[in-house]
Image: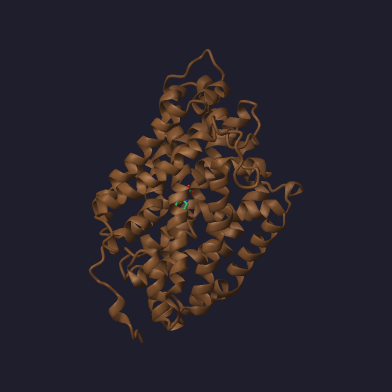
Length: 452
Ligand code: PHE
């Protein structure tokens, strides 16, 4: 069936542990998007109704595209640029489909550039929450951190450095080792935070806020936000999952692993909501605070709470760990490409690409202070412009192109090969979604976005 199976390079690295793909992909998926982004968006978009729409997006768009990305990556066992190219050529299509991979590499570096600045603030907050200054409010504290380019640069640099270190150690000794250590830690810390919310928070009110849908606040933008959040949170449309899929052993079941990864990602986002909102309500704060929710609202709570100077650092460590395991997956696709094309060694590639993200990140550092008045795309500051470009533009287009390619251009018998061991009706349902439902939904949201 595979007339071109010679293109399948078997010497490519493969995850060693049976659960590593799931851990690595969940490590990529679970990040600032879940613990920082999801709660504040649920908070501003009306709670339960947003959660419901978000779940729909995960199932109808996220899951099918995740399966498609893994399928393409694993078939070619190459970085996203070459994976798209090989998958296209093997299906008798133009090698120009590699443009989708290129878009992914660029988005990865762009996202890493601002992701690292926010993750740097999380690192800084481990210390701030351990030794809070009782003289100043948490808002003043946040402004103090963000008004100093030097402070932000310092933590941004540390975070990028950690990324370079892990990535240059390689797929097995760097990424695999780190996710096996970080992910269980993340789970334990998350459970501690939820138990804390049960003890110290208004848990019933938190549950009600997250699960009782109030559709009065739902409008077109709720759908846009939920879809964007689903892409970002599952790390789709930019090659991270495709790249990790390239290291997935052949015998693993794409459907089961995708379901597990999407499930874990969703559970962690909801647990993050359950860790945060009961506390917010118990202390009489507003859930719709926005991006400052964890840095401003939660910090003020940790200052007053019993054992706050232990729970606070634990929470921000959790956030930093989640951010780190995501950030490495932003850098890996381009490093894998450089290494594969013999442009540079793994170490030099990690250094060059990591430093590029670091350099672009300076703009995001400055957008909190010296450049806060400067407008780039559509009146947004530098950080928000890059965020907008990647999240609302590059990732959805990338995801839609993957769906169109997988549904319409990738040979079904090649797809079936990758789906071996999966019931045929699941394959057919997937085909239907990837051909029609997912691309149409993304296109609708996308057109709305441009029109609004
Ligand atoms: N999914 C990550 C998060 O939720 C962010 C991310 C996006 C990571 C894209 C890799 C690729 O924070």
